[in-house]
Length: 166
Image 1: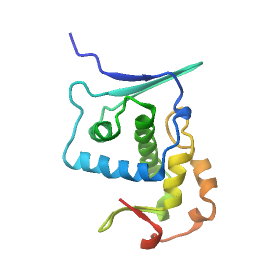
Image 2: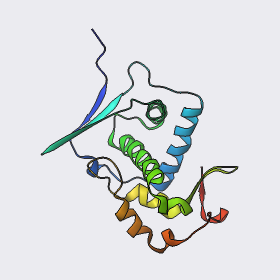
Image 3: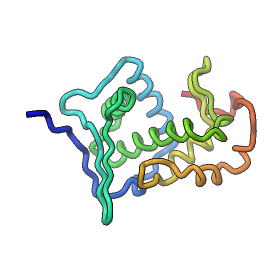
């Protein structure tokens, strides 16, 4: 008989995940990155996914790929994924990474792979820590863009002093 995955079940929608402190988001990035660097993976007894259930809907997210598994394991050990705060930190981090990958207009507000590590504009970090997620546990790109205003019209790399480094 195959093992049944351990699913964290929450009685609310992803949109209802709490806000977090911007510093928690940047610390989570560091923790998750370190977890990936050392190859941390989910072990027996670790949460393998999250299921949201609310009136009129449900969604399930499994930590199936290697990156998600490493990041979830690292954040589970740091914050615990058995509580809404830990889940909020994980999903906000994943949503930020997703948004950075798909929104070309955000490119001037972050730098990945520089000698300083990852640098992210503090206003983008704040937006990711505070903006609600969608039902698909992503950020509404239009809302983030409106919140950042004229910053997204800028071009070029971030000045070192305006960035939050990871």
